[in-house]
Image 1: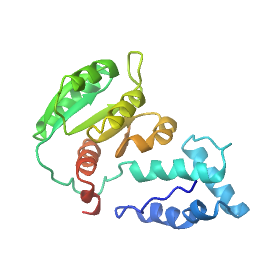
Image 2 (image 1 turned 90 degrees about the vertical axis):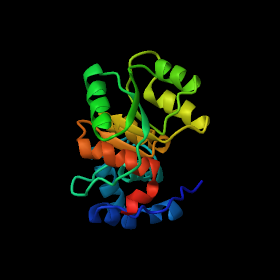
Image 3 (image 1 turned 45 degrees about the vertical axis):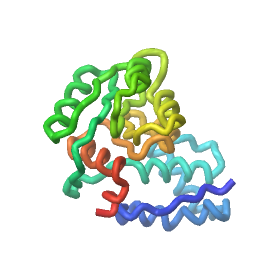
Image 4 (image 1 turned 60 degrees about the horizontal axis):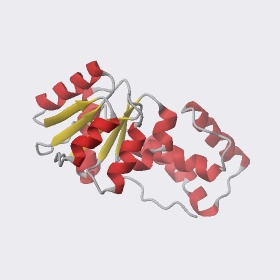
Length: 203
């Protein structure tokens, strides 16, 4: 099955070069030995699995590049006030995120430290515009489990927060954006803006 996606408008020149080089793989499923060596080398940099078919390696790496926030040199796009659910198993980090969002004019639901508590709040009609969701959570369910349930229900857009690049890449299709820890304030706000309004990616 072919993996067909559009090329995001907001890419660094380096990322666009990678897309131009490896996207033909998605149609042809073949690479030169040199390109395959370079692709597997990139995958190892991000600690991704390399014993998969090259097309699957590039699919995961592509999603990671596409959804990772890297806007250090860009002004944060403005967006209307939102209600944002924060799900983060580190209480200190959860409080920091809540403070950041409040200072930016957003309302915060949570923070929650477990997927179970967050899902209960959503099930009780907690209206939210976006989720900031850690992948590794306390409790039985992971952030990936919660993201899958929210997505299946047609819930709000998700921004993954994670220090685990491999998991982030493996489940990138569940999130609009990915922010890797340690995060910067501008990264989080830009990721939320882009997740809620993808047109901000072209800003």
